[in-house]
Length: 365
Image 1 (tube, rainbow, N blue to C red):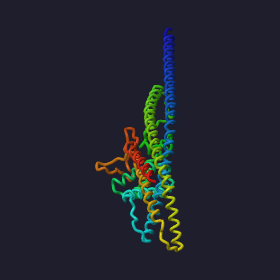
Image 2: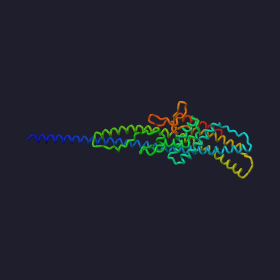
Image 3: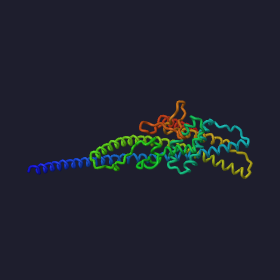
Image 4: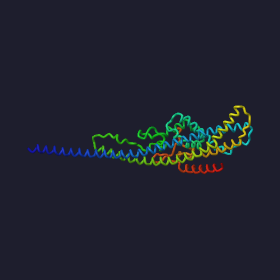
């Protein structure tokens, strides 16, 4: 008669064991859920902060790019008018039409003008997302490449500029695996927070132990992602500071350029063209004033051009100092996190020199 009791005892033990396992499984599953929930909240908090910084940087880069394109376009028109007026004055017999601005400075201004007009037509005209921001980042490195390789900057506009921009600008939002418009892959130089894990997407099977292990693995990956997002956000803040400084510098000079040189030269040109159209054969009596406006306009344009064509990020160079260009895209130096290295020292020096040059220029007029 003892056998049934033994069987009952075994069954009870098995039930207790099973219950304990079930309880353990429940505890582990609950712990896994808690770990995932905490990781998810932590990830979302830092992701929100990063995306806000990313969006702000994108907007600032777009504003800078738009201003640089506007300046380049004005340079193009100023240069066209200046060339036409110099030709008209020479035809009228005026002598001493030599400018004091070095030829290489004028060539650099013309190169920026060509680059901007080509870019406006090819990239902006094609409706490329983030195109203006792309110019803020790549106009400097394109100019650097042109200077180091001897390739005309126009050759680095058009299709090459389009390729560079599209290669730089990430597709889609951060949540979708992209990097936003311009402040993402373009600024950071690649997928910095990789892999971005979808915490809530874990598919758990019936094994609580595996679910718990997965949860802790997920939490560790979130910790790594958060560290990289924090580093990326700090980098974005630095980028914003330099973009603000560059914008303020060139906007201040551009206002003076338009008011005192570009607008007056356009007005004079319109009057002289109208005279010729009406067959009024009087000589260009304003030649001395025109020469002064052209000369000083080029001088100020040269100061702005030096700032605009200074790369925001450090280009990669070969041993001979030439830029590294792969598939039409100028390569940029990156740090251990894949973020583009700011060209801090060069930018600091250039901004300081340009401010000094502008103050010296302004003091004479």
